[in-house]
Amino acid sequence: MTRALTAFRRSTALAAALILAGCATVDPERQFAPVQQAAQQHTGATLRWARSDEERTAIDQQVATLLATAPLAADAAVQLALLNHRGLQARFAALGVAEAEVVQALRLPNPGFTFGRSRTGDEREIDRSLHLPLLRWLLTPWTGDLAQRRLDRERHAVLVAVLDHAAKTRKAWVDAVAAQQSVHYMGQVMQAAEAAAELARRMQQVGNFSPLQRAREQAFYADAALNVARAEQQQRATRERLTRLLGLWGAQTAFTLPDRLPDLPAELPERPQIEREALATRLDLQAAQIAVDETARALGLTRATRLVSVVELGLSHNTSSDGSRQRGWEVGIELPIFDPGDAKAARADAVWHQAVDQAAQLAIDARSQIREAEGQRRSAWQIARHHRDQIVPLRAQIAEQNVLRYNGMLIGVFELLADARAQIASVHDAILAERDFWLADADLRMATLGSPTPSALAGPMSSTGGGDAGGH
Image (tube, rainbow, N blue to C red; front, side, top):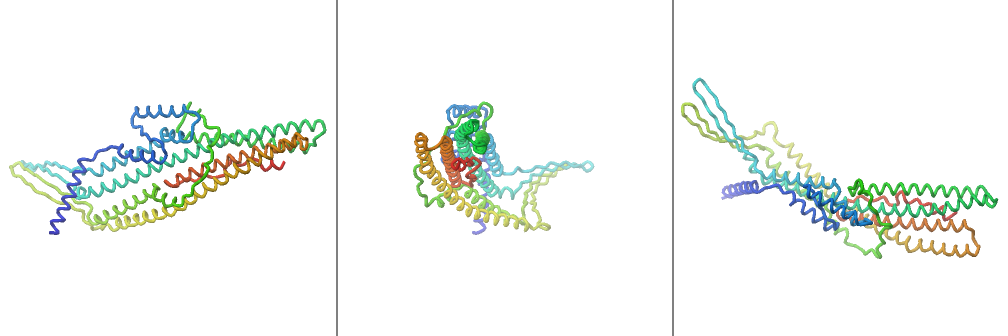
């Protein structure tokens, strides 16, 4: 009974392999559709894969429509990047490669045919033989399953690349808009410093200012001009970074950005379950689990075939000139004399343990990344709100009072200009705080979906000279 059951299972596996081999066809679209749906769910943007000139033309038309809508908002920038970036299009092609490998693995290997003719005197012999890779046929369901799991892992990797590109684009958009605002406000600081320097020059000419006092005003003006140059350099760099992520070139690079960053959210709701929710949705953890399952199955296959990895069935039909015929069959196997297969089994076992440990460490790192990203976002929001609700209004109130004091001739013009510079610098610092919040928000989005690339908060634009202005 046991032998009959075993024979039935083997015949069923072989029949399944034959069915799979006959039905397997290459269709990259069925692998791209899940990526397309997941990207739509997580980013709200539409993915398109240009596999023909017509599809490329349709994408170009959609890109032109997005660029014609000015200014370019953050969501529109993400949509534009996911449509237009040719690097992502090349990444999609990896799905086609993996799909083809699955179809290839599911197809039965071709049989071999040999034909020979020999002659001894007047006697001629003709040999015909057909060789069937029997073991490879029997293992087709297992090798096809392994290829399918590699395809699943590749599909997860492509989706993570899409979401990572979307997050980078959103952060680059935030940097570019903040840099544009920075240039505007640093220019205002320079104008105030220029006016003070010119007034100091005239007052020294009439003997009302010492060379030291004029030098201080000139030094502040020089620092302000340098800060403007740095801000403009930062603006160019951030805009070009965004342009690269959008995949734009030529006349397309003349897109316009909003004048200011979006307003801060009124409240940040508590998310006590964010760590658990993120662990359930992180795509890199899912890919790691697929890799563990793949290596486990590969380990089982290696152990099953470690001694005998080649089995061939041959059918022969020989004829000779005297009319005699020979028919027969033969089975060829690999003898495990020099290589018993223990090294292959040990390697497969080590690869499996490696995949398990890597998946476990990835889960540990993911928990920490989620907590860090959530903490950074909440802290950045509190700092930005403090700038908006406390520092900027207080500076504005001080400026109003100093204007009244100046009108009453209680302070001079230089004190008024210094206070104006301090007020402008406080607004600039508030812009940077808002920038840091939106960068942290993008990092948290990515941390809940895959491995994030944290932003460096308080970057090069944070040097405003506000302290010097306030104390002048």
